Length: 500
Figure 1 (tube, one colour):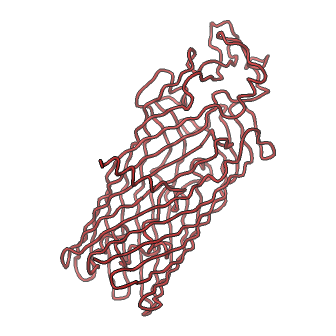
Figure 2 (cartoon, rainbow, N blue to C red; figure 1 turned 90 degrees about the vertical axis):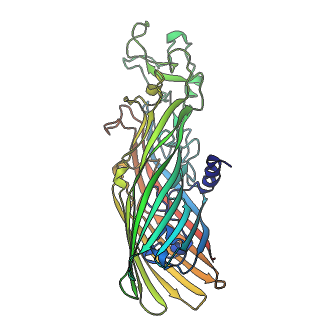
Figure 3 (cartoon, helix red, strand yellow; figure 1 turned 180 degrees about the horizontal axis):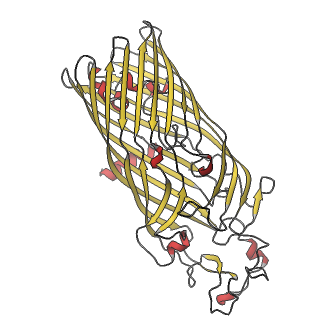
């Protein structure tokens, strides 16, 4: 099996719903951490998941250990329309949605797997390896979604291979280093109105309905014109890329009861290279202004082939640049009594590196860039995001019931990086809160199991979206979508730990 087939097989299992952390970041890297809403994970060494949370802690493991598990996420998302105005000025509301729907439940359930191995090499050295999904999102609306001109499917899938080493400086301090070898693939799609519908649309210069016989095409009947109500094509771009980042970590045992952990992950700059394509490639008609010298009043709207001759739309080589953010986690763990441990933590994420979703042509076809977006400078598509940096905080408690059972609980508050003025149907993210509970059960001296249940609830999310030009201003005659999103999710996490 070659490496691309292997990656495809693994990544097929990690097509994720809307990210459980803010933005498109994933928290689901271990069931043992899920029980505390991931509070204090960079200061705790319980199993091989320490490879992800804080590799410096691997030196505390007494023997080689393997952890394997997964998190099943079951989200629900709905959209309530306020109004949608298409490119021809036709407005639909919740009372009259015309040919459109609310998009249904646009969030899909998914399994996120993870696997880790860590082993001591000597008294002061340890090494480990992890496979997990650091980023991901998958929103997919019904084909007749009223906001389909802004977003249909947004799929981002990643798989990371992380080798890591740790070194004990002294009895209190240890350091860790790891490489983040990451494969990412993405798909963005939307519905397209090449002939935006408005039964009251007139020529720019006044006069008849724009069913004109120009350029040798017969005048459209009322039925043919009405058939353009709704979206008449579908567009998507897909691509993939490999990048390498790094992570640094520190673990400090202040005393026998208190531990501090620090973990840093670098940013990575991806260019997801692939193709842009229309579902319908031949006979594509567009609503445009009549060219000069054709015997038609200048400024008149006509319906004509998109390329002026054949209406054919070839695939377009393109790329989607995407910079993943750097992050810094601070964790605290304190043994309050023999049975009770308090854990807490905070993570800063530099989401401000994510300015926009851009689709850029890498192989020019005359006229096609204008057809696909018309933004100039090689841009096929441009979605303003303008995210800001965030801080997520979490607290939790572990209770050692007896030698075999450890009970966990936790709460987290995770800020959204999305501002109200730039929130989009493609990423309708908002602030969220977690409530989690879980346990660890020791089967024998070599095998134990972790389980966690988490409930995630979002603040209601308002969207007021336009198509924008490269300078961030709304495009002339841009469609507009207004409405409210409601979302929540359940997550079920299971993990098996085996000491070799």
